[in-house]
Length: 153
Image 1 (cartoon, rainbow, N blue to C red):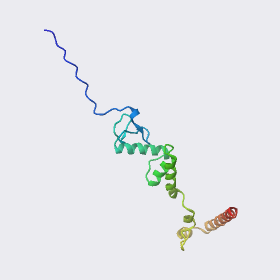
Image 2 (tube, rainbow, N blue to C red; image 1 turned 120 degrees about the vertical axis):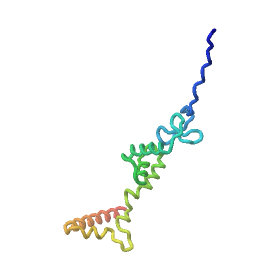
Image 3 (tube, rainbow, N blue to C red; image 1 turned 90 degrees about the vertical axis):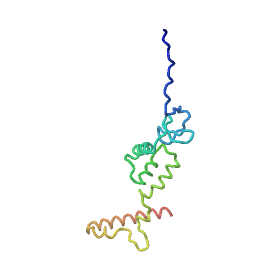
Image 4 (tube, helix red, strand yellow; image 1 turned 30 degrees about the vertical axis):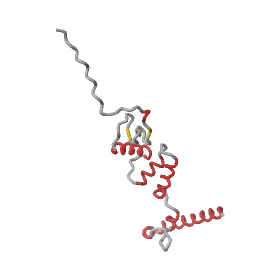
């Protein structure tokens, strides 16, 4: 009796649909793409979870600012310094981050309406020598400001 050969079984179907990179659009995170439906996927077309995206985003921010962001100011700083972002996004982030890193002149000079420009408790804790040095610095700053205002007018 001749042995009969059974037909080969079809290979098991993969649960993951593999899509060539050419059908994917690049997203703003390296290694992350968007498929035709706008879902964020990896280079093989596999949908990414929010946790993975957050990890990728944190990694990118660490590369940009040197540490994981812990405050909104850190996030804005990371966006402002990220060369992969568009210029308009970077300028917008820098504008929004500016108050966190450089106060306006009005807040340095004092709040107006009778509020002192320097916390009185700080002045009270200074020695006489420190107060004299502080006074000299203020006089010098006033002279520089006066010269700048004369030059501007």
